[in-house]
Image (cartoon, rainbow, N blue to C red; front, side):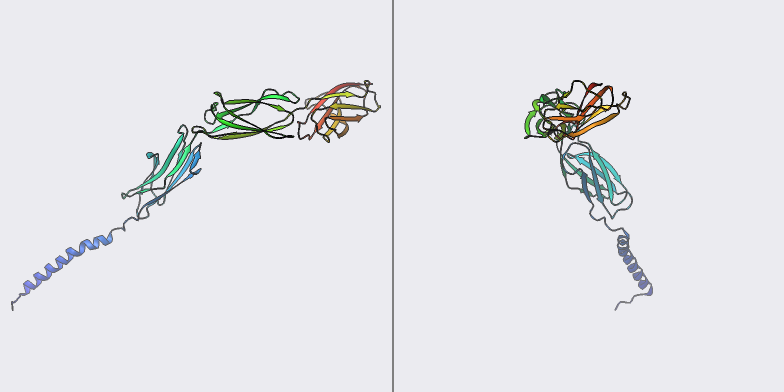
Length: 329
């Protein structure tokens, strides 16, 4: 048996403790480090959603990296795989908003958010796809004549781009004319170099005009509707050539297209005209026949006056009136 001195025992014990300390120190340090960052993630939404767009699109990217502290990294928005914009991220979750305007970028585009965290992770969102075009709108419909009476008129429909308000050529359109009485008529046309398309139509009643313009690979669709109201023509005559105060009389008017049962009234102008118009005093009320009306009345004052005959509520024609100057003796 080998003898060991007290000094040797102490040396061996010291060496053993030193070796244990060297082994234990890295393990203790590892336990003190913060936990590793969970996998970062990012989601992307848009308003309006993916599909056909003609105006600005607002994107919201939401990134998460809960294991980090302080500065989180950078949120990038890629359009067609090109870094289009970015925002720095300080908090978790990191919410970044971007607005993309596709003007003059007709065609299909892809958009994706990429979250680059400060600890070296790269998270990518789903890819959103859009078909961009410049919007269009239809101006007020033009008519070759607004004069009273039924008849043929030239109708002009013009398509404009919504950015520069210039006429757009080559746009296919469908125009439907629906009269108050009768069947609809449909016209198809393609806009000319100034954006307009012209056709003729015979108006006999109030007519709703609906326009649908189809989209193409450059310009977007548009719709428009308005109603052309037809002002009727009048032809009136008094039963007596001489109108006498206190004596019954009547007036008869021919109004082509006027439906039977339309409300009508007769009034005279009491006094001189003023800025707000004449003071009309009702003499008679009634209902029309088909295309014709007769109202009986008794003059209430002597002298020169103005008579007014008026229609109201004729759904198929514009409400209208006519006047005649008479002398009551």
